[in-house]
Amino acid sequence: MSTPGVLTFTQQAWEQVLAKVKRAVVYLDAACAESLHWGCGSSRLLEAVGNSACYLREFEPAAVAGGAEQPKAVFVLSCLLKGRTVETLRDIICRSHFQYCVVVTAVNHAVHLTANHVPPAAAAELEGQQPVFEQLEEKLCEWMGNMNYTAEVLHVPLLLACAAPHLALTPAFASLFPLLPQDVHILNRARSDKRRLGNLAEVDATTLTPELLLTIRCLVSGLSSLCEHLGVREECFAVGSLSRIIAADLANFAPAKNRRKTATGRASVVFVDRTLDLTGAVGHHGDNLVEKILSVLPQLPGHTNDVMVNMVELTALQAKEENQNMVAPGCLAQSNDPAAKALWEALLNTKHKEAVMEVRRHLVEAASRENLPIKMSMGRVTPGQLTSYIHLFKNNLKALGNHCGLLQLGLATVQTLKHPQTAKWDNFLAFERLLLQSIGESTMSVVLNQLLPMIKPSNQRTNDDYSPEELLVLLIYIYSVSGEFSVDKDLGEGEEKVKKALAQVFCEESELSPLLQKITGCDSSINLTFHKSRSAVDELFTSLRDIAGARSLMKQFKSVYVPGNHTHQVSRPHPSDHPLLILFVVGGVTVSEAKMIKDLVPSLKPGTQVIVLSTRLLKPTNIPELLFTTDRLHPDLGF
Image (cartoon, rainbow, N blue to C red):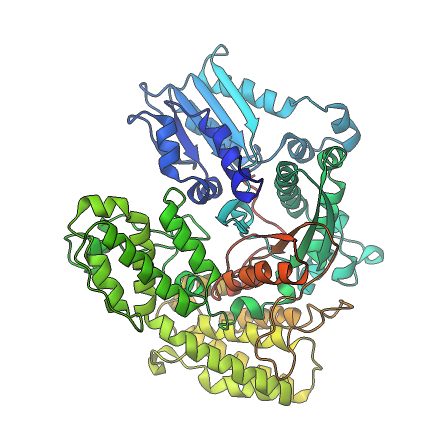
């Protein structure tokens, strides 16, 4: 039996689902599909279905209905069974010929009672009963058209997508992001003058929007299930305002209180707000190959933590752009391939140079096992060298099948090393180091004046210049690393120049990127006036000022920058001496940070096991979207 951990938690949860899917049409929402993708892979689900006439389908209103030859359906959902989610269930079932429906939700029944406004005292009396699920079972039979058909609604904690034994993400909460001071002003609009909040320190669960409070409760439900699987009585700690609310909710969650009475193990769960240090997320100081892969390769559709790897090179097709969509993309998650999984974990835990050498070593060993005519070469690893090794597998279907996972990781490496954006990584790093030096020696206005010449319209930019999205990344870096600063006339003038230049650049873009569309509220550059652009930029700078002051309410950890030290990232709380530390970063974590935590905690506290959890894996370009376009107070719950 494996030691309880995030992977066994996820796999055991999926085993409960797999036990239900035989000969069924299976509908999954995106977050559950991502959990499956990293935990056991879609092939494992297809094996469990065991019928070539049944399919996996995306759970959405326009989903293909089940035909007469498909009497059974299983719906695997990450969200509450309420509102739009239930409407979509009804629409699919009414258009189908199902006689047996199973609905799996990742949110436990206690949270469904909360979502249906059942008071805590009344909910306590319902312990062991599941009226919300039972009512939905009756509705499912009604929609199937026969009350004698079979319907089942159950809770399975499909919370995590496990990237590694020490690192797991929560895809259903990928957009959850800590609050900023501007959110306090929005909360105050619904409050009387006497009850107005002064700052983030005064925000608690009673002051949040119902949507955000329910989102937190859904997350807490999953985390409580994880602690139950680990067999621990957790002690909760928090650094940051939203983390404080989440930690308190987990500590007071009724099912968790009951669970803790019988738990024999001990653990510390530390929640940390990402906004307290955005430099670690947008900076380029992490010397890690996986971070670069995540940054330059396109995102896998429907996923937040994986990328598309172009597999055309392993086919007879010419590597032309029009052929790229003809072959299914590869990816990083290789849950059913032990050799590829071992390589993936090595890439997560080594520096860039060692990681590239590790890719070469795995390719050489695989080619040797298949008796392929490999020519050994030592010294520096080049993209051409790796490509030549990968091409050895091209016309050997058996070898290709045996090492498909490894080849996907190999191609991801080659495509990243050759990508023009990778060359720019060092440019970012050089500029960030210059900024650190400037911040240590100069005022904020001087730093902004250094940035000003780099803000160029599209018709004046070369490949080495920064795009508008990249400029936003640099601005976030500047304001986060600087921390709270005094506002004077020079700073006001410096910000005004940058705002004006940035607004003009937005207006002159020939085509607005998805991020700029969200920021400006315009789907086309033709409709973007300077006035609209300037309003959007003013809002950006409100957020930038907020993150500069994000640590101002803290007694400790006020700075992430020490003059003379080029890279100082996430602060390290030391809550207790429990043998297990679970660190949950609210708003995303980078691969480098996860590795740093994994290495650092045991060195400081020998014998301590550490698990890093977060809402998502971060790359620099994620942060502008999360910071500038996410509705932090009103997350979409599906109803």
